[in-house]
Image (cartoon, rainbow, N blue to C red; front, side, top):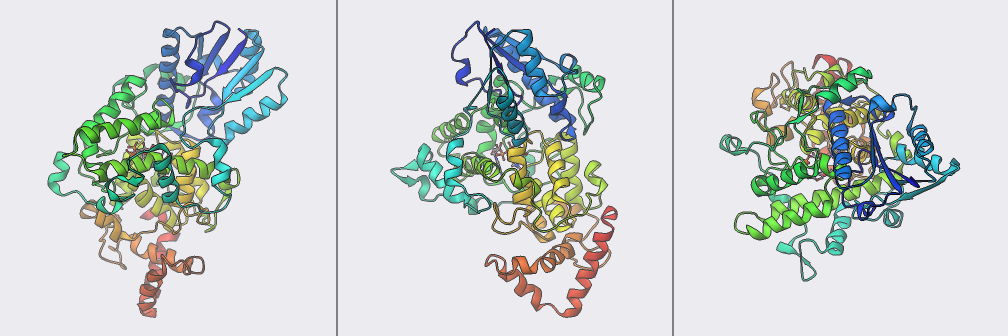
Length: 514
Ligand code: FAD
Ligand code: SF4
């Protein structure tokens, strides 16, 4: 073969221009690699999903007539790293050119850039043809260490791609329908939540391979993987979302419940894995959703559709740009100097706090939690208790099915931990028990009392919230979006403040007992 083309595990994009034409001079390589299994400890479902999707993509490509080498851990276990593997295969097949698509993670990007610089053969990199905002524009639009408002970026993307636009104006008269989207579930609502679209992908052989090669992992799985790992499955997840879930997506976007045992993803799409592995293209998803909306105008309101599209056209593209303009420094940001250790219940789910226990247990069992569980339950707890953002990042990067650093880190370190000095969020997403109670039914079944601030039964988030605000006052007070909080704090008597801070201090020295 003349050319060796590398396909990484998150580059399973069937519409890439690489696949427009077949040629007998090109060999494609898709390989399971030890280095990708241990840069962080992963959830077993995440490992299985990536390996299974890679296997499926390799087999779809060979069926379509491309020359593909799919290597498992059995065949790559003696390659120390990705460059070693590429060298070995290029030599074995006498390739004179190596090509790869630019990776989305800084770690792999640096590794392959280094390889390109030092290699004797011709090594070329091409675009992955997935994102809507071009890589080359990132440094023009975004500035390192500076906040860029997501909403402005999103509006520009709407205009540029002509999405939900009506003669130059936003469809429905508003850019953002978030204020319509803050419902909580009633008892009846919970019964009406449709079952999630799950698959039964057999991953027995992948699990035994992981065990054979002593790959360290955590979390649970039975032998069936429920996540979509082929294009066909991904499209059927998207169809299912459009048919049954879109109608209430926005409405219940922020709602949480521990009563929906059969459906932990509620009205969310479960499409993040298929999008992040590039099995689905963001514009394909957006267009499919708009078609559904146009076909069922009396059922599906603009606020459901706009809410969904904002996540993909806005947030997803935005966090990627934030990542690239701020890396590698972003990975070390810890502006609140949070240095506490992550409590052991992050690996078991066993804490008396019902909100946290439910969100952690669900994450450990399913490798999934929806946005508000990630942000306002788990993330909020970590921020209020000052857990080191490196540990928080590693936990999120390991546990979620869709976790790839470019999207995980800005969301975790930036949005949820406020460790990035306000590059993403203009204020910390800090909440007391009151917010959780407003958006969920968790507090009803909790050993703590959400209404109490101090005492043995008091919801720990209440004192921890005030302690957080008090501790970081010099940093936060000038923020006009937070000013009111300090007015409320200052209204309390000295005695009330002391008791609250004492309660928080007792929690902080013994997080394990919560
Ligand atoms: P839906 O709610 O159905 O949303 C549709 C799609 O929008 C998602 O599939 C995703 O592609 C996109 N999206 C939604 N919110 C965001 C966002 N904030 N940033 C980027 N894309 C978004 N998403 C990841 O893909 N990988 C991660 O590692 C990840 N880590 C997160 C960590 C924290 C602390 C927080 C607060 C959010 C994180 N998110 C991450 C964003 C979001 O929570 C997930 O994309 C979403 O929960 C995936 O489930 P879904 O496909 O059902 O999403
Ligand atoms: Fe969470 Fe507090 Fe509610 Fe318990 S009472 S579920 S700890 S918010």
